[in-house]
Length: 178
Length: 156
Image (tube, rainbow over the protein chains, first blue to last red):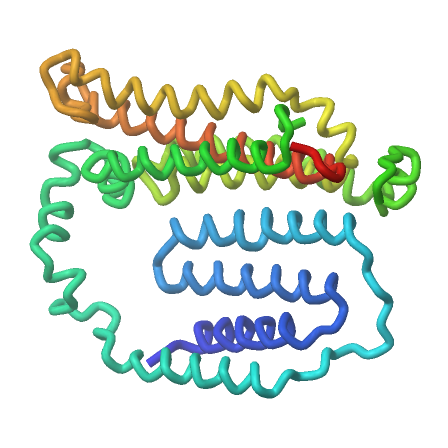
């Protein structure tokens, strides 16, 4: 079963997600979205995924929030009297159906720590875990997989990030970042 | 807005100096930058790595801009430095990867370098390259978006 901490974090994530949808004021929605990302980062931490938690906290809660606020300063922010936005019921119905379809698949997932889970019982996983330290000498097996065993993929990812920067400069027709 | 007027734009931008935020950011900044570098380097021995460390460093750059205003921060971060970091990161990764090919190894076969703990140093070099790419591209995109851009009708 889930612990009290996990339940509290899940509740926080859920409430901030719904607040993001319902708040009428865009700035308030951005703040709620930042809180959602922060809750999610803490949730990753309780699920023992610190690498994902670090990225979620820095990118999700930090960079994305600031980019949204930056965009907001470049647009007009209408002052509204109502706190909440009116609910679009057909869209809400589709969203609930979609979430229901996703939740329906949850019982099919293996339990946390199940030794017969496909990701764990896989030969490749066991090979990484057994020979990771012997072949690379790094203690963090995630880094060993990312930078050594699957280093070619990671090189592709790094180039994608670089290309994203170039692409934005091309689109805004500038030659300089600053 | 067809007439681009920097004067009116400065008035529209809702930047207000806050000594609380400025002081906090000034004190926190060196620690966060160091932590970002630590996460990049120490990704080999604990959680983290180039992507995470780069994201932390970039988030700190954005925090600096948030506290001190975008324009002064922009003046500190020269375009040349950002471009050098981004391309340097890609080239560092590429050369560390291609190096073993010259030493009768395969692409990214760090142990072909032959010295003690070569894979570990190779991985750390690669992580540092990734961190440089991520940090420079994120802060570069932020400054590019912050400066703004516009089309004139019929521009090619």
